[in-house]
Image (cartoon, rainbow, N blue to C red; front, side, top):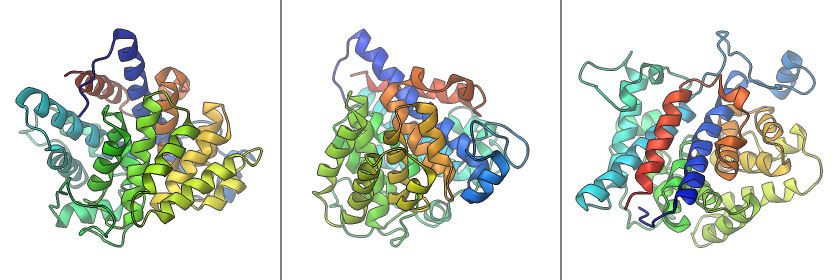
Length: 355
C-alpha cells in the first residue's frame, strides 16, 4: 500500500476523487438498476424517445436503490482499508487478499441473512440496508459459497483461476474500482484487482478486465485524462498472456468514442455488458463519448443490457476523473446509503494517506 506523503491541497484532491469514484459508481448503479433487464425499445417506450433522462423509481416504486454492484464495491473498500491499517499499525504487509476475501464473506452473509446478527457491532455488516438482495451474480454467489480461495500475490496471471474457471461475467469488474484508489502503482493495483477477481471469476478476461479498471482508476486519481489512463492501461494489459479480449474491447471503446456524436445504437455495438470486457468497454465509451457527466451517465444505462453495472463503471470513472463535486448532486440526493458511502470514502482516503 502507498506511503507517500501528501500536502493538504493534494489530500483534498485525492479525497474528492475517492468520494467521486465511490459515489459516482453508486449514482450510475441507481440510475441503471430500474432498467437493468429491459431492452432499449422497452426503455424508450416507458420513458420517452431519449430513454431514462434521470433517476426513475424501480419496480417497487422506490427511487435511488443500488444493486449488488455498489454493495460489493463497498465491501472491497472495507477489506482494503483493514489491510492498509494492519500494515500501518503492525507492519504486516501482504494480507490484503485474505482481508478482501473476508470482506466478501461478509457481503455473502448480507445475501443469505435477514439482517445483522446480534454479535455484529460495526462495519458494513452492521448496516441493515446492505442486506437487500438485488439480483446478485451467480458466479459471485457460487464462488463465495463453495470456495475459500485466497490468491497468492506471487502467482503468475494468465491461466484460468481455480474458481468458476470459465466465468467472465461482469460481477468481478463491477467491484474492482477501489483497488485503483489505494495510492499504489497502476501495476500493483492491476495485480491486486485481478487476483481478487479470481475469487469468483476464473476466466482470464474476467479478471483482466478487473485489473484494467483498477489501473485506469489509478491513473485518473493521479491526474491523467481518461483517454491517457486507458492507453496506459492497455500497455500494461499487453504484458499478460490472454489479454486479447480485454484489449480488443477497450480499443473498440476508444475508437468508437472518436466516431462522432454518441448514441445508444453505437454503444450496443460494444455488447450488452453482461460479460466483463463488454461492461468495461461500455463504461469507458460512455465516459469518453461526451464531456457532460450527466449525458455520459445517461448514455451508459440506456441500452439493452446490464444497465446498472455499466452505469456503475461509468460513474466510477467519471467520479475518479472529476471528483465528487463533478457529479450531478440532485441525483446524489436520492442514492441509497449515500451517507454511509461518503463516510466510508472519507475514512478510506484518510487511511490511505497515512504512512
